Length: 357
Image (tube, rainbow, N blue to C red; front, side, top):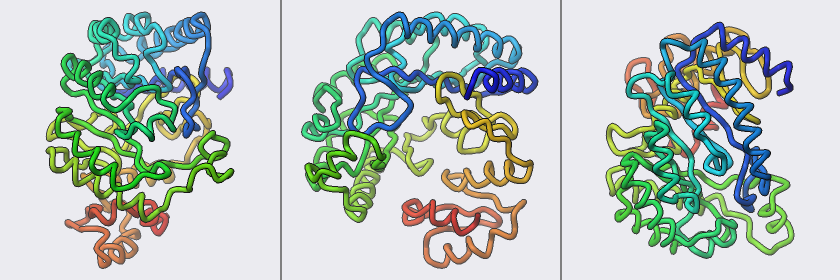
């Protein structure tokens, strides 16, 4: 989104209070071999400081418009937000956080130093999401993560001591993943997790991983094995008390990420920073696309199928015939006008949605 579009976006926000904020930080320690997200490695401290200064200007304008309501959820993602000095942003945000606001920061395991964790806590952060990605040392080396599974576990323990609602991210389906990973997952019982996000590997073009597979150095992931690995991971998480509240997210009762839920419930959320996604009324960023009222309602409603709360078809009775066909195959359960994904349905949600739209 260019400067003119960003300015128009900010002006639209100023006219409409928003409860949820996402801020993107495109800086990384190094580009992971699988990553196609908007991020870059090796930038200078001066560039990072300039980036934060620009965010502070934008955020100050938005925060002034949001008063006195304040943000109910804030999420700093990346990239690695902790590579920046976040204290100026904390200062801008502090007067504009709602009581009991949820404030999440994504964290690379190698950034989990005691002084940084103390600074996050002092800045109002309430939960941390640590990108562990794998519990297999060989896979972590291939990913280019720079730590071992044992080191990640130790650092997560340090994080959890200060942020009890801390969680981790895992990626399933790495080339060569097999039964050994299931044994690694059993170690999660010792982590004291309250939240875990589990994503299947998406093989993006123009990544180092895609080039390795194209050259034959690594084997392409097998879809059936990936699906089996996702099922086994879900079983391990259920065994330690984490319930699936969204296709990719698991939490102990009462500890779901409120920002995640806001997004999948179709609520508005402000996205600031390079490449940040946002949804304000019918406007979508960073594309700048403006949906029709009907398209906007449909999108917001469909998102709910991903969650354990289900999809209410009261406004779209025409969807029910397709949904009932999937229910007959055991992919959905129905309660009145509301449809819920079954465990099997979670695996093919995109195909179900394709039938509706």
